Each structure stands twice: as C-alpha cells, then as structure tokens.
Amino acid sequence: MTTDHGEPLAAACPATYPLLDPLAAVREPGDPTCDVYLTGTVFLDIIFTGLDSAPVRGTESWARGMGSSPGGVANMATALARLGLRTSLAAAFGDDMYGDYCRDALDRGEGIDLSLSRTVRGWHSPVTVSMAYEGERTMVSHGHEAPPPEEPAPECPPPARAAIASLVPGNREEWVAEAAGHGSLIFADVGWDDTGRWDPADLADLEHCEAFLPNAAEAMRYTRADCPRAAARALADKVPLAVVTLGAEGAYAVDGRTGETAEVPAIAVEALDPTGAGDVFVAGFVTGTLARWPLADRLAFAGLTAALSVQEFGGSLSAPGWVEIAAWWQHAKSYDDQDASALRRYAFLDRILPAAARPWPLRRAVPTIGFREG
Image (cartoon, rainbow, N blue to C red; front, side):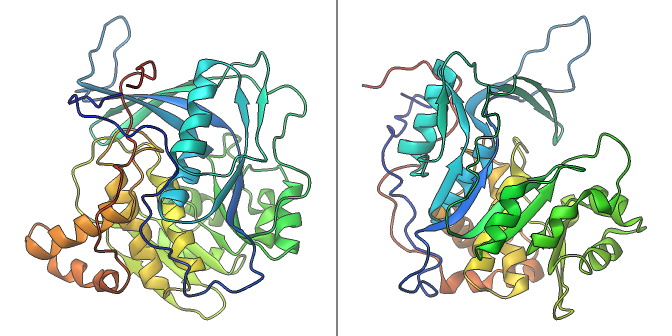
C-alpha cells in the first residue's frame, strides 16, 4: 500500500507509535484498564480536497486531492488512541469491504479495543463524501440504521476513566447516566439542533457530565447569550467545565467549580481538510483533563492537536500523534512563523514531549481502500 507520493504506507500493525503515556503520573493499581469509552456510528469517509469552490449544479468539478478513512465516531476514537489513551469503542460495522477496512484500520492499525463492537451481516456501511474548499467543507452522507439491536452500546458500559457522549437534543442516553454512576467522567459535545428549539432542557444528560464542549454558535443559541464567552459562563452553571470553541479565534473555557477561566488563541496553519477537527479538539482536551493539567494547558493542547489535524486528509487518519506534536513544537521554536506571545503558551510541552523517533509512520488517508499490500 502506498501514499499519493508512492511512498510505502505502514501495514496494519499494533499501535506502537504513542511514545509516551500521558497518564503515567496518575495511574494507580486498581484503576480501570480502559481510559476512554465511546460509542456511535462509524462511517467510511471519502474526502475530496483542492476544490476551488463548491460544486455547481449541472457541472463537473475535479478535485486535486482525495483520501479515504474511517469517519464518524472513528475520528474521536483514533485521535484518543494516537495520544496514547486506552480507548474502547462500541459500534456496528457492516460486513462489506468498507466495514472490513474500517474495522481493520481501528483495531490493528490504531490499537482501539473493539471487543464491544459487532459486525452486522447484510448491512452496508454508512458513507460520507466530504468536499473541502476555502477552509470550509460540504458533506453528503448515506446510510441506514443497523438492524436490531440498533444501539451498539452495551446496557452497562465498561469501567473507564472517561466516556465521550454526543448529545442529541431531546434524546436521553441511558448509558451516560450508567457510566457516570460508576465514576466515569463524561465529556459531551452536541450536534446542530435541526428543530430550531435550542432549549437547554433538551440536553438533560448534561447533569451527568464533567465537561460540555459546543462551538460558539451552539453555545450562544442554547444560552441566548450575545457572545460566546458569556455563553460559556452561562453553561458553567449547568456543567463543571464549559468549553466553547471559537473557530479561528481559538477557544474559551470556564471552570464552574472554581470560577477559573482560560482563553487560548488558535495556531496559524495552512488548512487542507477541516474534517474531524472538532473531534480531535475534544480528544486533546480529554487527554489533558485526565492527565490533570492546568485548564489553560488543556485548552492549548486541544487547540494545537485540532490545528495539526487540518493539515492532513481525513477526519480520523489526520489526527496527530506525539511525534507530530513534538515536530511542530521544535519547528515553532526555531522559526518565526507563529506569534511569539502565543508560543509562550505552549512552553509546557517541553515537560512532556518525547525525543525518540517513532518505529512506524502513522497511517494516513489514501485515495482508495483497494490497494493490496506487498
């Protein structure tokens, strides 16, 4: 298997590339073997990049780049695993070639525990086509609900330090309360409310959450606030940690227990594909929180991992590992292409980053899943 440039792509192998355990300092005997549990739908993502504009009806558009990778909940699962967290995913996989590819990429390629997942005979994998242009993206998806049991999550989720939930307005997920009751910290994001209600009461599962991480538009609509920072402060009355992403401006967080706030500007990068950047941000914030870093360090790390992810194709396989983070930091300290005051915010990386080289390159999105190895 090769990349767009004809270079060898790492064959599926155990995920040996995390060169450090970010939780080593806080692990104790008797801790759960799983760091983070999550559940959801895995898509096959097909990504077109290098488009000059959005496709126009009645015309044919050619993309200068293309990649394929697992998507949906796989974005966040892969980002967590590449940061060295022991990740367990409960999901349904089709028994088609798309499903086989996604399952292999997550299991053997990333070292994600799929023991709670299932393969559904005769069910075709959901697919998303994402078109990236001018820093934006347009997506078209197709799929059907998996046949019963429709929800792949077990009734009793496994013991874990944390769990990540994607809240659906008006729907309650019983596993969220179950996981929180067994001591898991729940980190939640939310999708767009197509009903237009934007009623905070529709997010009842927030009562079980440690952190809520909406974007600025979502936060302002749910709180009726006129700016995202005010929205974050209002959300901190409902959840211990309110984190609002501000797009090109960075992110803002409020700790509702202590009143502490933090704001970190975005890192300047040349974006190739923004698919999955929000998921990578959540994974970075979860990592920092479980490692017990200061709030501002968590926020900065989350923003950095998200920024590095948009420089590669694909939502899941664009997620950075520790070596990519270390390479960015060494470059940033050697060149003046970043704001000096912003870089001081990342001095904490010197205490945690590895110096060794990784034994295998990270798997990246490639134009087709049909290449044969060897």
